[in-house]
Image (cartoon, rainbow, N blue to C red):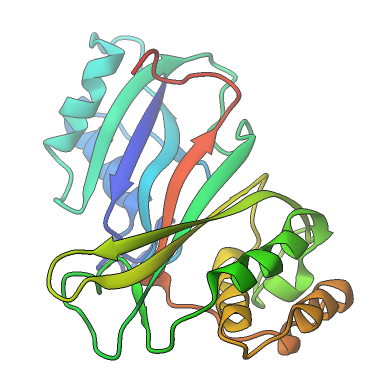
Length: 260
């Protein structure tokens, strides 16, 4: 039986998605939980890898559950959560067709990068957002984002170390969601939601840094357009910290878990 899982995790103290010999990872914890719950090891396939420190509200993965194990697919989530650490939880589980693969079947993914503007760190925001001392012009950020939407060669927006065959990707949308933290000093922040058919290594974090720099007047729209056209990583700003990034949703063209 092919089981699909919807997983959420706080990546703060995790070493990312992929199994490592010396580190606690999401994939590793899920595989240990499967073996503990059902008595047999099964490899878990994720929709994609998230780096150390990156969070997820809607990571999707699947694994093969032995046919002799009698359990309702929707109850697999409860069985696994018994053996998972507090930072990792299976939110939903279901049976999917045998040919479903969480990685290869994915149509689009949505990541959120969160920043807040403050002269000093706010402890209750620091875990899932990045503090920026100087406020940014959201209108200018939107102007920059429009350049990045569509199909492009995003070589300039990828860190070294990637072994992908092509750096061409499609960004369907970049949306900005202003928010205000009402606990304490009414701190203003912005969520940047980026939806695409796939992302290069650190692509969203580099995009967020470039867009933010444009909103602060440190980079011009023309400079970002030039970087996109030339593929020059050196023309852009820094890669933003991992803690501000959350995998929000993975779309497959059909509903994995039935009606909400």
